[in-house]
Image 1: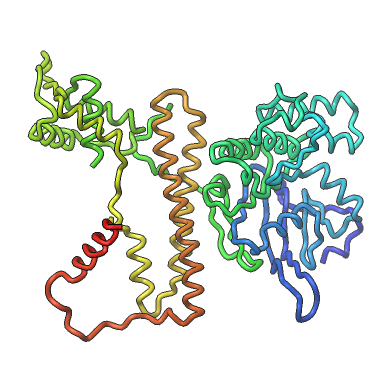
Image 2: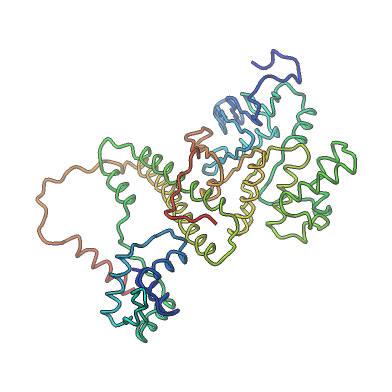
Length: 254
Length: 209
């Protein structure tokens, strides 16, 4: 469908839409030994929206995330990031789009140990050739947004696990980046620290980013606006948090 | 029931009148389980009957102050130093529903589970949103409220996990051909209380382990 238009073209999407998957399928191998990881996924993520993906191991959660982030090309279907059809773009341009638009947050933080928190955060901007001063300001802004401005010059080993994960979130929103793709981001953290990271993720999404949170933990998924269940590569259910009722009688306002 | 011990623990801090106890209980438990004044006075009557509190002075507004006794103080100490033991056989509405549903013909048990999971997740999302909206605790009262909300959140999470587990278990059972619905039995039920006796036996076995 999309191949009719010239490479790099944009087509209309909803103004707030950051990511769209249209009929995304992923098969590994061919013929009788072919394995279906994803079977026709439709999903959108808009600004201000956090979508949780839940499912058992092998349900396709992580595959979905790598496809959404343009790291893997689906067997069929379309991935649209900020109005750009990835199938229209050569791989070099996908890499640029990825660098400018989205950031990954992984379970094991994935910070570069020889770089400071600030350098880790600004790495994508430097690769993009931003001027030094602008890079510095953007890096500090992103670190301030996750409450770590004072830790800008520290190295990962001098930060706690929770702080390292907040640096990873800062890296995912630095500069023009606004789509956070998080794969079990609290997996390596204790429960209370993990909650702080989720609170920060929620906070950044409320400030205008969009996010996908892959998790197998219902308590973590509950921070999302929508919870999507995957089973055998298909979306089997979706929970939307539209108008939360107050469940707690007599809750005073602080 | 912990209301009794909670009121006693508050009275251990000094004499209180009924309405004051209600306010103290509410602010120390995040106002999540509001008590009515009737419950408070019923509880105070029983505490007085059991010799754990005694009626004290009455102030000019007619408030009757209750005072803790030595036995009451001992009760508070014992409450704080011992675990809360939940009855293992406490009725659980959801567990009963699933157990019954699995024995009925023509019931799509995985649909029952999915409907419930959606509902439980909704609860979990609402609780999480409520907690997120309140920010970091700034007082002991906030902290008490958050502890209670966390407890509700963990309970909802446990429910979702139990549903996931049940779903997997049922899928295995179905594959093994164990999912035949139960027919109504034609044998007349025996009189007496056989089920209860079985439970008591189990409890004795568990107790002797």
